[in-house]
Image 1 (cartoon, rainbow, N blue to C red):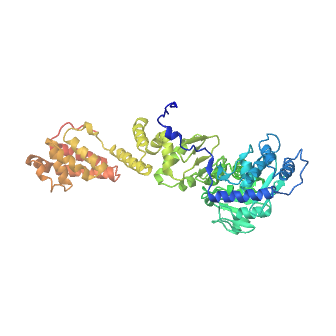
Image 2: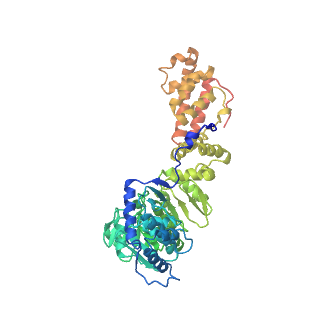
Image 3: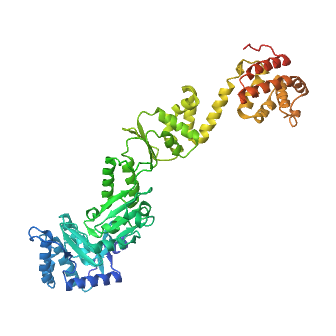
Length: 566
């Protein structure tokens, strides 16, 4: 017997023999198998078990989608034990879509073993397992085979809902109200009982942070709350309660019990809030109320997350105000600018800077919390932050020069370097403005001195420099200058230390000649500093003549010539 060809193997053959796992299919756990077995067995016993109770007048099957489905479900029910007929029906392209999925589910009910299942994964309705048979719509098979799940069974009726029908499902019942959204009272009660936010009360319900009287009387609060009104039930929920429902949104926990999930069809929502400072007798802007209704509608129809509702509602109102001043969520009338500035968190010098900027603005402006600046068509000034510093950080690049000119009288050339330095550093504006004010004030004081430093001969120029340094930074800051002085400046430095009683630890730094000369100059230098102290630090402008006379005496004592007349 001839030998057959040698078996050829290639690298990776062993990996190819591994089981291929198909996406969307998994091996069912024992718990899943038992649940699906129970549901499919019940469906086979009564194929109409997944149908809702009809609480409406239906039309003829040719014109009414619900009536057409009910009629064909009856036909499929009569053939539920005919597996050959079910096999054809579940792949038939024509006919009712729900019944196509029903036929496939009934065929699965006759299978002896369900070990492999398909997985339905929805970002809204969650994940569940089902047995896929035929060409039926995936969501329909999920709803039929999970008819005990109040939410999942609604999926069967998505196309009927698009045609204008309404369905309400809860643990105690399943109802179709036809073309009109009429929520059963039992549905409302159970949805609110099982909602993701704990609610107190019965006909009037409220979340933590509210009281029955507030909800019942529709009272406005500073922080705001949403008021939901059903036919016989009123619900109040605070913004802080809604902000904690990220994992299980409140509005979804209620709306997903109906199909289509549009809570706006069976309830009315109101946002119970107005800006602080807004007069009770003055109506909110009409444009803001319209935007507010749009926000609430989007929320009730699952287009806006719970935690974004409060901010969106407040912004819809605040963004429509056309006059006055707004800090955070507090409104001030057009003639209450000082109250507006006083409300801001910060120091007086920061408020003064903002006042200077407001004086320079032409029209309205909005400074967002992220630092963006928007020009407004109206006259309103709105700061989303209630603190001065972040607002100044945002406004400084464009308006800082006006602040420097208005508050400190700096010229453009003087202000430019200061403006650029603060723009880069973003130092705390309170400290920056106070330091600048002190610096500018000192510079203005030093302008009272009769001689510019560069026009004075040595060592009088050094005496003038010590006076200026002591005025700006204090006596202690001058000691280092004295220690480093040379020749005649060293003698003047020694005299300065004697005047201020700072010689004890520094005598060794000065030679005997400098100490001798400095000692002779001390009386005249003491008179010069006394006059400078009165003129520069005590604002005694009459002391200027005393300063001139003391400088002449110092020039004479030191033998210095060339002192210019003033």
